[in-house]
Length: 305
Ligand SMILES: [Zn+2]
Image (cartoon, rainbow, N blue to C red; front, side, top):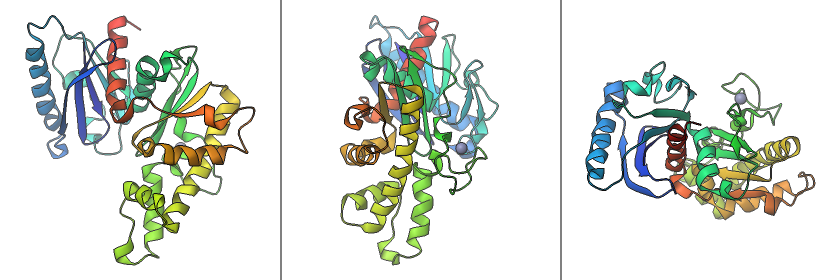
């Protein structure tokens, strides 16, 4: 049994995950970032201790802690190297400072963890070669080939698609993350809102999708532009790596068929030797993809891989 921790932002999700991917004891908390490390450690340790007592006498035992966390991580030392955002108080610190236990602890970047979760519990049960994109605040992902995670494939979002785009945090111009991510959409929303009446403003990415499903031409234009560039990155990875599937994961992928059908249409003329309807699929793990990912990260620690 794995204690899984999904740290994608100020809200951390936790649960227990067993070998076959049953999630139980789901519990979330908000990190009090103003308190720094204790603002994360205190609520997390409280939940961790309760899970230990929950398992007493059940015959199940905790074997490892698996963590998926935003930012650049050092998985060898379980350390958060660089998060420019809400978890920056953790930069340079290890998760062994946060969770006091003799169990093995394993940390991964949340996008890589999502690929590991999909490999173990999702589409990877049938498909051995796939690229996974996490569509969220940023755009991340991972590459699974021959049933194994390619461990250096961590920066899928920095595929350049628009030479006339904006500068990315990596230093380059027009990476796909700067065109298709909640961060990218919110930048476009701010621009478009300048020309909209105050009562008609687009509030955020969720609202953008809601309006785009309706008849709002401004919202549609933002989404269509993002899809145009996302499709170019998908086509590039497809042609160069020859995976069997491209899996869409992350919060934005929960827009489901509405988003998928637009991507498929954009891909039709630019995807070589493939049917985009077969090639691009949604993650099977739904809204709890991060916890499946963290569970898979912990399973690897138990299995020594
Ligand atoms: Zn970049």
